[in-house]
Length: 312
Length: 312
Image 1 (cartoon, rainbow over the protein chains, first blue to last red):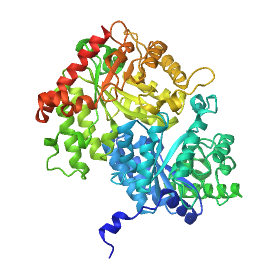
Image 2: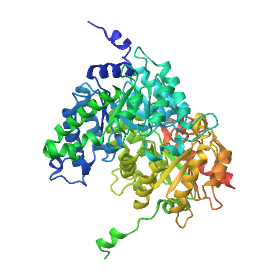
Image 3: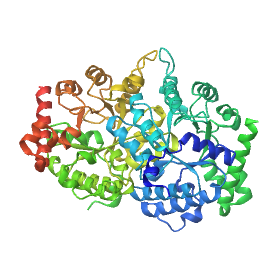
Image 4: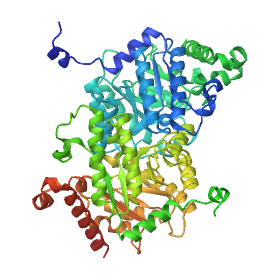
């Protein structure tokens, strides 16, 4: 028998290693983003439900996300619930988020909580405990974090992540058209996003494990491929979470540079292009709306194949 | 009788004007920050409660925040719940947050939700709807927003705020020691925080009402008084939300420059120094822990007086 003392003293397996193992096992780096949006959800799930009643919408979001997990959960290593869409429904939306996280974990998926949190001092510590701490009620594996408040504000997230074997993805270069406004500003020594990247690399290096990667990663959009390549080189110890694939226009060849020779070092997210694949002609024509789960699974398999082909 | 059509067509009173009216009425610009932290809460409220059980802790946070509102709700114009401390408790913490917001509103207080949200595209729109939209389940009056993702990502917040008569406070210069790392970087034309300030002023000016202030304000820490004065001048149409007073070390004279001649244009937040005033010798000696509500009210009155004296 393993005594309680032994269990308490066990070092958790670091996020970097769990993510690497799951990617090797599933043989692909795809993250399915869970962005439930009322108007896009298959009409069969919405029928007879009052869109103005948050608790009822929360039930539809729950059914939709769980069925998406049934469709794609066996294919990919990780999912990324987007907290905004659950927060929009009030506390009942967050009950749904918890159910979605628990179900994803039961399928063996890594759960990256996309909350883009960030604050100072004791508040940063509260966010770190909330989403990364040993007593986190949300039980995600990683959290996205915003660096605008300064490097000191990232420390509580790093500490909580290391303690529990969780992960952090710091926003470095985001995928939206306006991301240049601040992130690309040319400070005397280097651009703002390079400043952030330098600090992320420091934190990633000091938490790195056998995979070569650490607990602190970076969000780097796929919509600026040159900067993606530059940032891959600047942060050799950081897992990259790459958004912008699919609905935002980035292609497989754009993200190929995010990976190391083993195919590790990055995960690539797609949300709407998978969740609502049935609404895209190339899948809708084959599956129809009624077979929306099959459309989601097929879109996931196609993305996996595209990334594999581009990495060559 | 007022017909439904008339009600539907009514333009909501803008946040800038509601805040100005409430400050005039209460004759002070103090915001009490609601940061419930387990270890700091009066022991009488914690007695017999299991700190590891989120739902029970949520009940203690609810009792504490509602009793703080009883103590200070008649003194100040606004309160600022810090979302992190409620999120830390899971969905039951967010039930508590909703109760706290509703109770604060029932007392006529302006409620500034301190969530520091920010994201891109459809996700930014979801956060805007969640916290500022007409159907927001949270029903706050304003939200703090992080600008790192770019100016385009602030637009959904501005649109939702204007539509409902709500407010936004964009992080410009935060109060923490490490805030200089990014915010003070010297870009070719101006520092990063000045870039953000310039955009905030544009949004504030185009939404400004009779008070002279707009729907989009700025968070500017009181711990860097010279930059506070500089940013006051750079954003003449923006309400400033000024943290850092009290527990973080800023004094009344440091924040005096945030106000216009009428005493408008800024609100000053204090959280721990008021909530846990009973633990400060100057109040604890007089009131004792049992009279923690009286200590909170007295600390609030003292802060009101200090600010009035400093504004001269």
